[in-house]
Length: 345
Image (cartoon, rainbow, N blue to C red; front, side, top):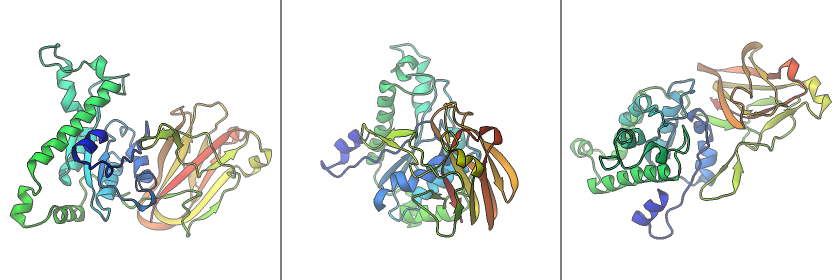
């Protein structure tokens, strides 16, 4: 759809694609990746399309991560335009009922692929069906080339409608406010689902927080076997979270005596991002906060090379905590990778 946008509204060299989608990941991870993968080198986007309507089913916060991300984008100093895109599975399912209130709250344009294509799947060719389900989908979850073309057409249709509608909304005219002022007023109001993670930041080997005290213990290696994606219009693959901490008990027997990683810092909320894998030589890690067991991070639950974000804690006030990630005793001859952390001060 960016080619369509360029042809319709560009001048030949002023439209630049920043493609930063990562397969199989929710807004819980997207809100952490936004600064590094979208706002690169301080270049602010003018238009952002956000799509998590089929990958957010496992979101622990039931929409708070999604709204936090939307608010994070809207609050950028250049006030980018934001479009919410709701993809769909072949089962005619998505999460738009949960997520659309966020779009309504901040008066954002929304594009529902479910609403656009699913009603016509049941019709016969010549009786209103434009494309069949088999033509649209590559498998149960992913559109094929034809499906992606239809999705691009839906976004392009939105641009055409917006272009025809003029600039100021009726509300802006009646209230004597600019669209930006109305948006600012909306951002100042309470969120519709939640915004606990609006100010979340990424912590890894590259982006270290000065007041975070790290004892990497046996997590002294760097994992290079990572989930990788095609960024922008490149065909080459870019690895996600390359500045990680890896425990490797397969080679370094000395590591096994230090099968832990410790992070101490004052914060209100903390997320762990760890690597999922289907390999047999990866193991589980137990997560403790201030000496108390919280959960086990198990790379084999998803069982494919994948970035997994999990909330360690999300409190109302900021306090000092010691987080310890310890390799399960039976897995100390295996590997485990901490891709990074997300923190809210």
